[in-house]
Image (cartoon, rainbow, N blue to C red; front, top):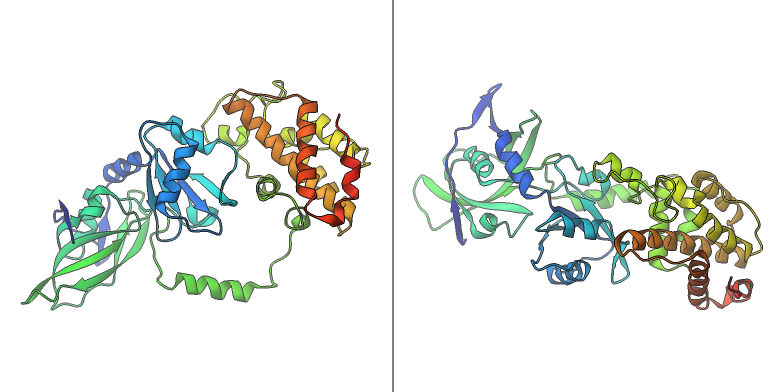
Length: 401
């Protein structure tokens, strides 16, 4: 392997007659600092190349320096920006899609549990910590070039001198500065060109993870078996027909799905994370932004939603989000032409509400209520014309305000 930085031997500590790799806080803090301007991107249902992702990121941010894009073997990307402005521009812009596939964007942090949210946590290491870990196996000589330059994040490859006369350990016990003890596995490859009692081994050490450090080579098979066992056993959600039995565009449905799950990055959520302090909702400039106010308690959005419903022959006042969803579940169930059009209209209204909010924040552009209603109706017709069965129902939406 191409030679990178030299490593040193750091004597492991013994705890309860076990060899434990004791990581130091200053070392992990240093590694964390290097990744604070990083985002996690996962393309749902597709595995694009690094070059494709680099081109996509370049279209999202106008920057002189090029963000560094890393690919992890588990199928996600880690994008490290040079400054927080570029990072926030991607994070808080409108929903991202690549080849009509939604992109899940997450902020990386040491406490972020990627396994629960999307896939699994991001590995980090510093060269000092890498020396400590590998000293639990033998005398670490050096890391390879990709590990040194951090061109690869799935694992670290190092060269270690070991006594092969002894049984080779298959995993290491690593303890982080918070006292959490994890296990990391490694895959040795003996260099047959060496002779004698001591041979040089090339090994891949799984990167220490802040939350989940264990790696299981049969994880994919285990997931398939788990899904097979759970088919038909999970309770179906009440709102499934609003999203999945909907003729709307994929980006409408993805935004609606995030809204139903309460996962849109509203200002009240961002304030809890300490990202922003000003919570004023940009569409009305009167109240603080939260999920209920956006859908559809704001005076601006109440007019839009009431008008869209009225043009379908529905006269009612908008309620808070929970009650509105419950009403939609009951009113829009079934497979009639009316319910199909209603579901399309709701998905499109939610999408354009969120889009208008983002446009005002990031582009300082805005449109009137009547303009937004015309835009929504135009897109509903453009989408619905593909489905002849609902063409007659769309006739009720042929007038503009």
